[in-house]
Length: 194
Image 1 (tube, rainbow, N blue to C red):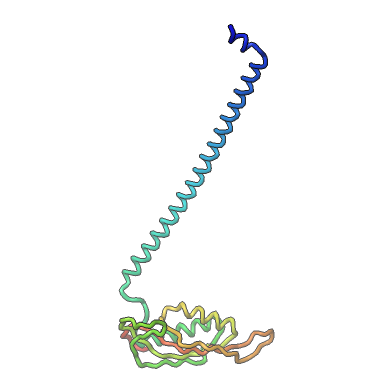
Image 2 (cartoon, one colour; image 1 turned 120 degrees about the vertical axis):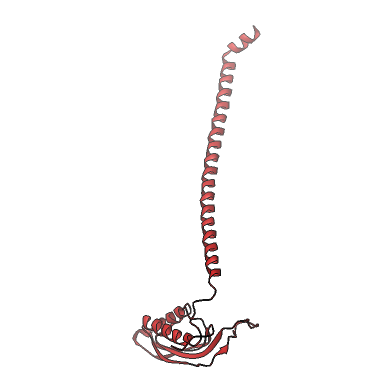
């Protein structure tokens, strides 16, 4: 009986009602928060999975490139004296592409063992080198672009010196320059001069 009197009081019933509403609100808030965290984790995990798949793809491409490089026994560089003709042809084609001219090209036919000037030790190789010099003439930006493209050519070479001089002025400030190159053409032994 005591309980029925206590529960029948209006203040107690309101207190229980407010308490139950507070507990319900806390439970709903906790459910919403947990749902949000679950969605964030799912989103994060799908991003991680995509990143892992992309990384796996890049690793696979790198492995294929390594296999292809190992399969090649020798680079596709022209052999011996043929390297001189190949380099001259590449030089003239690149210069023409950039609106420049090759005003001088000389190369020695004397084959010397390859020795790099950029390392303290001499690599054990049977490759040969030929001394050469060339001059490219044209507008300054074009000559620099041609030299940049020449560095990626298919004929191996090393520069000894590159000297760029302005040889003429033009309206607007853009002058004509001449780039004098002293270099070594590097090639595997053998082959004929073209």
